[in-house]
Image 1 (cartoon, rainbow, N blue to C red):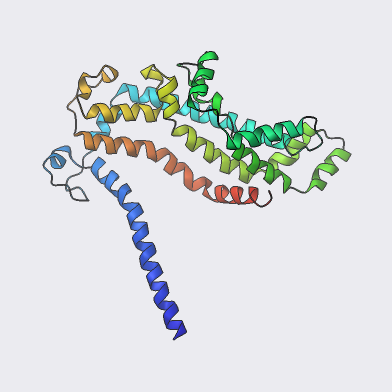
Image 2: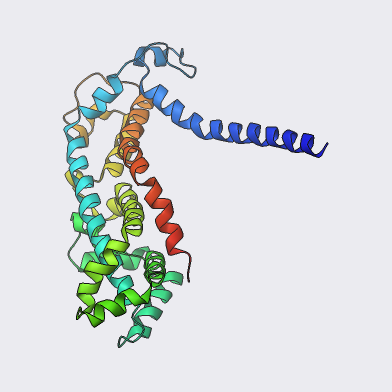
Length: 291
């Protein structure tokens, strides 16, 4: 009887999980389907869930805008350079925070702790970027957010889980702190490095608000800003827009343009995530073992 109730409960769980999974997959299926639907078929209202006639016209339209490639270059720059700099600052700063005997250790720790609960806000951030002369520069999307308190504390916790005897043995062999960090700590930190590489890369790839605030030149727009402008202007008259002067072809329906744009933005992250997934989960769990 008890076993029967358990099987019944398992069936309910499977059904519930299946429905939840389908509800999460449905938006992705809808986006892919609309983006691949023939514009004429879509305009006639014959689209249900799977397209009757496939077409790549929407992708050709989006990829045919020369401005898109400028935004791809800008986004790749801030993603690659920003991720490297974010990792460098986070990994080194977190290692410094593990050195309790370092002069000023309490000051740095309390500063990071303070920033975890209090943030200057949008206007001070804008004024800081403007005073630094970074307006309309891609560096304005990278430098103000080189690290964050949560990342520092997670990485510091991971460092503290490494046996101190390894560092002591290196000290006895004559190594200094920099050598120990390079040859002992970093090689043991690959899971955390992989996890935070994904964190930082996804965050930078999805740069949007800071792109609107700090970048006025359309040629330097991050991909998210460019696509948002394309979606907005596709609802009006994209061909007459000053930002899309190179588009002079027949415009597909705005809805298919939106979906094709979303797919193009999602694909790079969807391709990268499976390769880092195991390191992603392992790295975050290792960093959260000790406080």
